Amino acid sequence: MNTMSEAEQQQVIYVVDDDEAMRDSMQWLLEGEGYAVACFESGEHFLAAHHDGMRGCLVLDVRMPEMSGLELHEHLADRGSALPVIFVTGHGDVPMAVAALQRGACDFIEKPFHNEDLLGRIRRALAVDCQNASRRKRADAITQRLEQLTQREREVMNLVVEGKLNKQIADELEISMKTVEAHRARVMDKMGARTLAELVRAVMQTSTAE
Image (cartoon, rainbow, N blue to C red; front, side, top):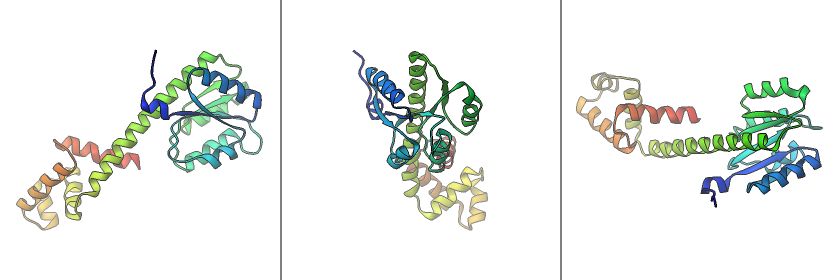
């Protein structure tokens, strides 16, 4: 018997659809596959429950009264949500769904759909969520290391990452070469970087995660 990892157990599939029969059908299907499911009848209800710690994916109907799925997606983007979104569309909604993909949605599926097709897309979305969570975890760890640096160490690090040589850094900061070398060694130690390439990657990860 397969057992879910801790990360998978934290994931929830959020279904937002104004059609009660569709919500019930999806909940029955997904819970039958062992997934945790939370259903919402409107975008407004989901936004009220939304928080940054949500893990999993969002299965979102495009056409809903009041707030459409596309509008909800835009609200989530404004909040910086990284929750992967799968749009459920009617045939005439495909151009809108394609536009949503260009704005960062994960996938879309047309009605009527086969259950296995939906499940396959959900599995891919959950894998994306795991990748996003791993990146956030690495970025958080790097941020904590950055916070341990003194102001001078951060200045030296930034110049090192820019590709400046020790002599250039010493001249720019008006300090001795030995002082630069000492700061550089402490930066490498505090950042847990063995090479300059590792240091550059760490700094780039924090900038892309912001």
